Length: 243
Image 1 (cartoon, rainbow, N blue to C red):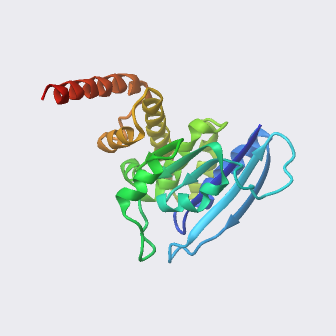
Image 2 (cartoon, helix red, strand yellow):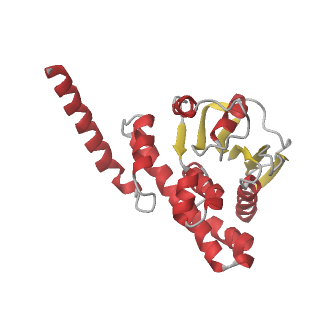
Image 3 (cartoon, helix red, strand yellow):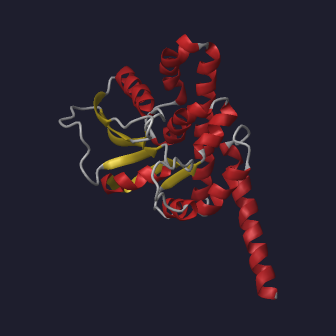
């Protein structure tokens, strides 16, 4: 097993917290691990990135070569573009749609999200909205870790001890908030992925999860939703042809 992950975002979004939880879960599994990181400036929203390499055998470099990353996890959508050259042909992008407009010429939101949804393998979700529903907007990083978990060799429960380790000193409520954010991210990501796997376009899947309450989304409901969306599409085509 070898897994190459790029974590990206801007300063203050907790990118290194995601890395810490993944590091500890990897060590607990007995995996080999190497990590390299660039820290941005939290106040100015500078770019932050981490190369994380996990393997069941020795790893000889802490940097991921171009076209060798299995996953890009980004807490800010524009930051994805910096690292696409590292992504494998069949790699997956897991990104939040929550913008951090930290530059004067930040691109149009619609065009940016459309570009992300055009990628071959992508999960796009509003981590900021989901985190607020979980109890704290600062938990968007845990939403993104949960969203990536369907593509990782870990269960949600394996992350719980390290979330408690990180946040336990600040109160049980914060631990539970972050675990709730992790779980919601997992469920929304799984729901999105199952919809796309059943032939629903990524744009339609994204529009749907934007409408649904992230607290009540259940991956098991994806089949029913996909059937309903397909039926609506057929009905709309029939109406259009009859005019």
